[in-house]
Length: 290
Image 1 (spheres, rainbow, N blue to C red):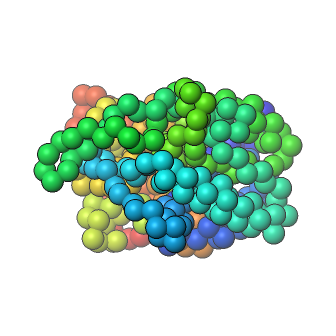
Image 2 (cartoon, rainbow, N blue to C red; image 1 turned 90 degrees about the vertical axis):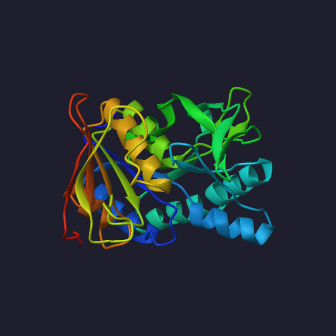
């Protein structure tokens, strides 16, 4: 495919994340010979567009405290419009502004991402666990790499996002962090960088100085309860990437200057899988690296 080490970068959808800065940094690295795939979400743009269109938004919280977006048919349309019609063109244009050829793709293009729609999701509502059956989200089952591999050979940056295509050839929402992990595994990537609106994994979510330089996640089951919301899903995605053979996974800050380069240099939190016989533990780093 390519001779350069491959890095998959996930650009989070948090409005605080500096997408233009990420693209500028990726462009510099590509000009230096790096091979990069950019995966993106768009939570901020999804919320904005849903508000403009009057589509109510709802978050489902599973019994293990992992939260996901509730995707009814109207929200699925918003997701597709926001990711494919707004976020992705801006990223492609920003890379082009730095003389880097990029091609925007969703998981449906060429059947790149296949998923099985979840028939029901367990969610906690008013303290009770209920089954939600009309959610148009899925779990990835297959990744086809022909398109991103061809683009990488041509020196292009693939810019990839949900949705995937389900078993009935219909769009289905999938988590972008887990998409990045699945692509990193299927492409044989050396590194996965999950850039978000936080310095990394924090010991205390209300204390930005409580950065953990290393986070060891259990080989199975939910992350530590201190990891809530989107961070819990990032840790699950990190574990999936490591289990699949990706050498290095970091969760790092996407808000500062040169965020990709900083993460490659070790900034943020390096995620590892704890040996089954050892307790899960994390190390705390008091000084946040820029």
